[in-house]
Length: 478
Ligand SMILES: Nc1ncnc2c1ncn2[C@@H]1O[C@H](COP(=O)(O)OP(=O)(O)OP(=O)(O)O)[C@@H](O)[C@H]1O
Image 1 (cartoon, rainbow, N blue to C red):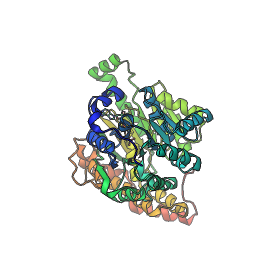
Image 2: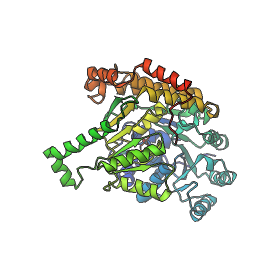
Image 3: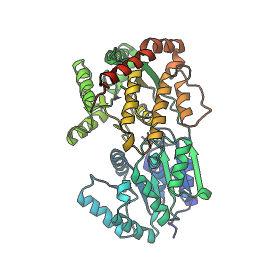
Image 4: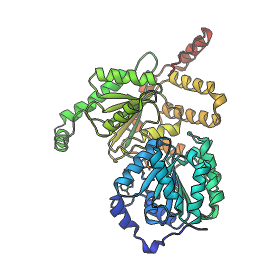
């Protein structure tokens, strides 16, 4: 029983873009994706971080008759999008662990009518697996009002993806029960293997699917790797870098005038530092504050109110909230445009995670910096932590490969960083970057920095053996 769809001929996609989404032009292949979605095709979209994937299902949802169910693993992402849609006067709602009883009942009552007023309903994959929710969806489907299912962060469905979530695998239920309801799935990070897995797992129709794989390249991001070893803490390196950025803003007359005109603070260089451990987030933020930088920690150990306040004030560019020192996943789904830098204090756990996190920077398209601090000792610690968790990890092999890819990326001083990133995601033809990576800026300097900055392999392996001998592995804990 197909969902009712308005034909494309009688809708003006461009008009909706302007009127509802307040944008003037489509980016890249957004328009083509939207037309295919409105044509009731299954669609797979892979596009760079910050590309504007959400519009690809939000715009059809506004045009089409019926409701679009959006499956999304991240509460912050849902909240951010639902708030933005509501601000644009689009009827959107969400059901997740934080939804109040009253709001949940309101949304479920709306579904139970069979003719929901809600245009976009964001839900967790766990919610989709509950019988009560499925019952409501069946009613909507029978009334031919289930327009489309959108699966955001679709890589979570694949065991080969870095963020595999078991509950995503139940999403096949949609195709099995509503075979004619189109599905659109979106991700920023899918290797060919992950893409095939997503299409298979969701049961997408090979004959009726449109696959869009757009470049993962983010031209405005300046990638660099900074080498370190345990002997030389890199705090001062980072502080020095940030102070130079502040100094440039203060001393460059043109830049200063521009900031004054916009009413911006000289020291409001918004950024994120990703660290691995909670105590580390606290320590780095405290140290930065004592050095006059407005920094705050953000991690799962903090009270919800404190986290909400930190996030809000960071988004607002309030004084004292310029730099957030966070454990991984902070900022995912938060569409803050002016993040000027992202720093990885140590090696991230996966290549995809690195790309996603670095992708928080420069969403306004302006130049932004992504710095990764890398040491061979960190590398060994990362692999050891992974081996220790091996038994609980379903996708150990995929994760180990992805971690190795981050190591290879850091150790590589012979190739453009943009090229390396695109290559990982299966793109071969990548245009040279415009001096937007450490290799392009100074290949010789980079090689020297690696030679001088990293502990030698012999030293690291001796330390490793010594650690094993005295029964100390030197690892931090959360
Ligand atoms: N055609 C467009 N013109 C201008 N801005 C756009 C357009 N499409 C989307 N945007 C804006 O781009 C920003 C990023 O969009 P979105 O959050 O959908 O990115 P994404 O592709 O999901 O990225 P990520 O994978 O990093 O979450 C948003 O502020 C959105 O409003």
